[in-house]
Length: 615
Image (tube, rainbow, N blue to C red; front, side):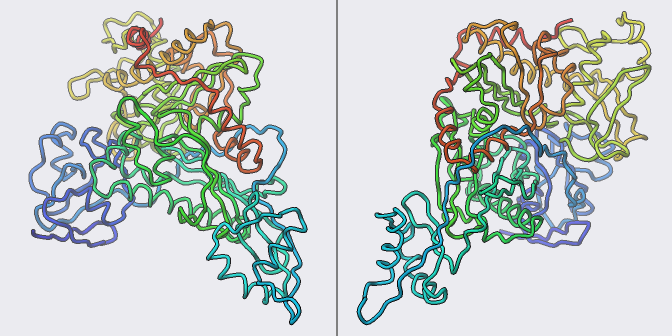
């Protein structure tokens, strides 16, 4: 089979690929940082590249997703353009956009109880009268401190290390212990320092917290975009990638491990410490990210009855996962609750202490899969609402993530006003701006309860008539123009189309229906819910009034909403710093009653009703 050269501009990166490969395949092969929100299925139209030479004729899919002007200028979709000869391709800048990654959260009191222990011990040297082997001498010394049946975690590795370490340290060393297991030995007294990192692995972002395991002090915080986004914006896209690509699972596992190791190095450098001083890592992640981190196929999570491979907490040697910390280190993976309610939700519940609450509270982490938990210490019920990627900006005509250049909030006064992350001319809108826009249009009467954008002659509200010039057509459908082409960073208009509103209706309908189902199961009314806790990035950047105005959250609860930041990160930190909190996480996960919305008898009618707007 023929092979052809592909030159990527800017930078003149040259690679060779097999004939028939897509430009997306070549981008992956080249290691370029380009996103494919729909996983390369030709649905979103976001993987725009410019073919400078060798593109051939556009496909039918490209003609549907790109306008004639774009095609004339050589704009193509990387996932649909096949390579049939040598090609020169201009890709969007590979410089990573600065994303708004949620780092902070609320803290709560707890007792520090390190999982691991370091103990400095003196070992009697051998003599002509004492011929005990080195290992026996070490065990006998540990027995003096109550470790009577201590065994090495990695027998061969430790035994290979022991003779030299003992003699270099003049028979004084530090033992690293986990329960009754000896994990490692170190020369001299290193008990003064023991660090760990807590990670929240999200579908879109990864956040890591470097902590002192003795004091709980936060030494640094680091974050990055989840590199798996280049294989799909949402979990279903990534599951499909593991199924459709022969090497898909390995690739997704490898890039997240690499990202974790990079963040460990970055966190250690920021704090002025060595990664070898890190002995523990905790992981909170949704079920799909959890499986991909472990290298376990998530394919059966995505098919009925949506079963995870494993849910209980896991303690794994760092070396087994190639996590680059102290070789004696352990990885503490928090437990999942169900196929689409993962360890990140467990971490949120641990952080908020819903399991000990006297009052009924509603906890929502809004994203592609909205995780919802309702309850108190008496009973907790949870569900996963398949909201789709609208809140993340995917499959929205002008949508993008909450990164530099994204419109994040929209205001309706005498004219449309907005704010842009990082300032400057906008590139698109993120989920919070979509909510603001639709809520504003709804309140002005420009959208009816079915979500239909009304023509100018049907508007009743005098304030709405001020936006006559904003009511436009886009590809034969009604749209509301937010920013004209000459005021954007890319020269294309930014708007909210009728299709975008439908996507939001489906997303908000899924979340709202999930809330209603849990209320029915628990037998509570809106008035019984004392507090709504919004977790995660989207939940903390949205405008509560907009969320309530469109019916995402019941309107009566608007004044009871509290943003709790990256609560999953807080839960991961608690689980790392305290062995009892880690055990409690397992108890919480076991107590939560999972509800499969699709099997709930009235779900379809509740969902259909929830897609409507309330005027």
